[in-house]
Image (cartoon, rainbow, N blue to C red):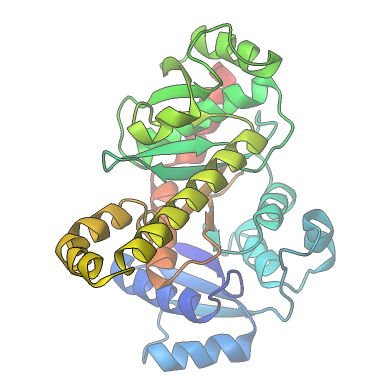
Length: 332
């Protein structure tokens, strides 16, 4: 099995990407294809490993940035690291793609170069959100589709259900619909009609109803279904809240000699709390609905996050998740 990795994507590329790829190769016995500026990638490899076994380099002199228009960049920057990694999968040279680059470009590349699974109208990004119980929920869609239809959200639920069952080993995931209230009649036309589809599905899915944003961290659901606009707002709000709370706590604890002493005593508890929200544990967000596994790693991914994103891609390949999605979509 080979995983194509966009070596230039992300804030910490290529150093963290190369180091994480080396760790994944050694730990999971994988072939790695690194797409990026060859001289930089080689320099990083020589710095961190003496063995180049199972590592290939595809030279790519261009980089797609967050400032590029996604579709235009995929079509025009054919010598970019992301396009070269996607093409490796398209041409059957690799089995999956991992990138910490532009979300929009990854979505566009996955759709235009790799292609959608038959029956899927819109691929979706599923982000794993930690909760206070030490578990997590899959937020889908978390940014791929700003404008959605009830049928799209229904498909998101199907894909998320299969992903958690096969990749995350959750046998009967609880599926909830993000809404402004628990009642069936609450919400706009999109959520009301989606609720009806999920409630009356013929597929073996565990739909538990609506969930409000304040309940997400309580661990009441394993899958949270929404359109990309709502999902991205939820994701960014939670990320920002956790960061600011940790900053605020640090400032308060460092404000006097007495609080500094208290900080020493509660440091283990604070570190444990912080670890619950460590994105690097899961590695990345899958782009579900395309013909090969595509994992979007966090833009600030360190080597641990990159390694786990590659592991995620490996498990997706081994679980035949795309074949199961296609089968379920035909039965919906």
